[in-house]
Image (cartoon, rainbow, N blue to C red; front, side, top):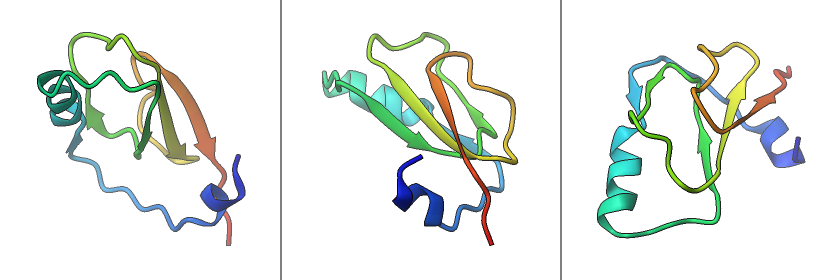
Length: 78
């Protein structure tokens, strides 16, 4: 885990939807080489997997694993 991720204060509360991000990228015809999402994974996902890779970064205490993409768990610290 990159050092800066290990020191970020991450808080989650749920209720996030990632659908608008993917919709906006599609509408703008943007195809990133990689999309990095910092999330607690208490979220809504688009129905279809995008054609580009997704890196989901979540704290140790998080929701269900994402339906696609790669998950990186950020260790909790004091």
